[in-house]
Image (cartoon, rainbow over all chains, first blue to last red; front, side, top):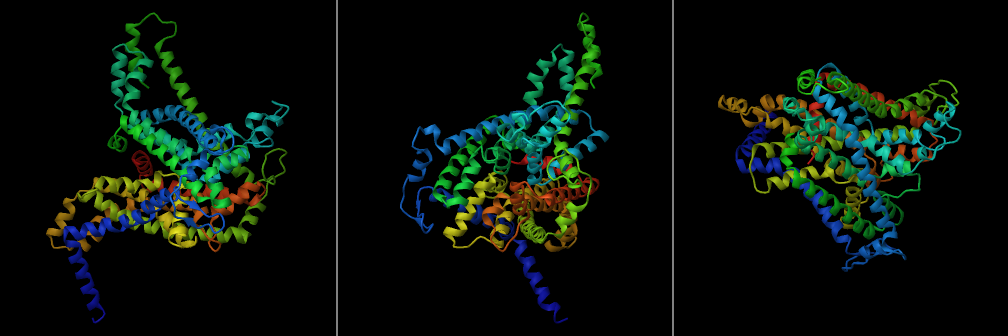
Length: 309
Length: 292
C-alpha cells in the first residue's frame, strides 16, 4: 500500500498536467521542437556562420572574423571559374541528377500505370518485388552495381563469356553511365511509389470518355493523364533529384576515383583536411539550389496536393 | 484493359490499317514487357550478390568455381563484423525509440491542436528526411565538435539518427491520426476515464500499427545510414555500414557477399511478414507521397 501511494499521486499530477490545453500542447510539441531546434536549426545556422569565418589549418579552431574567403576559394582554382573543382563538381552533380530523374520518370511511369489499372493478386506480388530492393540497404544496392560494372565486372565478363564481345566495353566500365544506373536503381522506388499514389487516385473513366469523344492516345496522355498526375510527377522528381545531387556512396564506388560529385567534394574536404569553412560554403550552394528546386516545384503544385495524392 | 474504348472507336474510324483491338493488345503487351524488364533491372544485381555469396568466386561469375558456404562461415566468425553489427543494432534501436516517442507526440500536436507556427513546425519536422545526408552530417559534426566541444561518438550518432528518423514516424502516425474517430475518446472520457486511461485503452490500440511501422522505418533508416554515421561516430562505436564501406572499396572481401545476402534475406522475410500483417504499401506510398 505504501508503495502505491506516491505512484498514485504521480499519476494524479500527470493527469492534471495533461488536462489543460496549454500544457497538453507543451507536452506534445515541446520535445520534438527542442530536438528540431537544437539538432537541425542550430547546426544549420552555425554552418551558415562557419561559411563566413576562417578556420585555422593548425588547430582546426574557428577564427571568428567575418570573411568571404571561403566563398572566394570555391571559385579560385588558378584557371577559369568553370574549371575549379567546386564548379565542375556542382555542374556534374546537376547533370547526373537531371538525367537520373528523367530516366526514373520514363521507367516508372509504365509500371505505375499498370499497377494503378490492375489491382489484385498481381499487384501484391509486383509491389513485393519493388519494395524488397527499396528496403534493402542502400549500401548493398550500390555494392551490387560495383560487381556488375567494371572491366572485369559481371556484365563485361558475361558478354565476353557468351562470345558477344571480344574485349570489355567502355560503357560498362566505371564512370558516369555507371553512376547514373546506380542512382536510378537506388531512387527508382521513390518515383514509382509517388507516381503510383498519384495514378491510383486517377479516375480512368475520364480517359475512356476522352477516347470515346475521339481524342487520340497521345492527346489523352498529354491533356488528361499528365495534368492529373502532375503532383505525383513533380513530387517523384524531387525525391529523385534532391538525393541524387547530394549523392556520395554511389559516385564514390561507381566513379572509382575518376568522377567527383559535390557530395564527394564536401566529404573530401572535411574528412581529409577538416576544411569546414570550404565545406560549409559549398553546402550553402547545394542547400540554396535544393530550396530553389522545391520553391519552383511548389509554384505548380501545392504541398497539400502532393500529400493528398 | 479498356476493350470498350477500342470497340467504340472502331465505329468512328473504320478505315485503319491495324485494328484498334490489335493496337490495344500491342500497347498492353509492351506495357507488360517494359514492366517485366524493370523488375529484372531491380532484381538482377541483387540476385548476383546472392549467387556470389554461395560461390567460390568472390567478384565475378566466370570462370565459375563451384558452390560453398565458406563465405557465410567467414562472415559470421569475423569479430569486426559482429561488433559493428552489434553497434548498428544498438544505435538503430535507441535512435528509433527516441524518434518514435518524439514523432508520436508531435503527430498528436499536428492533428489535434491549432497553434502559432504550426505549418513551420510541420515543415521543419519533415526537413531531416529531405536534406542531403552529407550536409546534415557535416553540419552536426561541426556543431558538436566546434561549438559544443562534444567529440563524435555513440551519443552524437544516436542524436543525429533520432532526428533523421523523426519525419518517418511523424508522417505515418499523423496520417493514421487524421482518420482517427475522436468521438471514441470522448465517449471514454464521458464514462469517467482520465486522459492516461483513454490513451492507453482507446487511442494506443488504434494507432499501434502505425507507431510500429514508424519505428521500423526509423530503425531501417538508421541501420542503413552511412554518411551521417561517418561524420558522427567515434573510435569506440563500430557501425556496420562503415565496416562494409571500407570492404567494398577494396573490392576483395568474400564475407561482404555473405553479409549482403543475409541482409536481403532478412529484409525479404520481414517484408513478407509485414505485408501480410499490415498495410505496408499504404505506409510507404503515404510517406513517399507526403515527403514534403
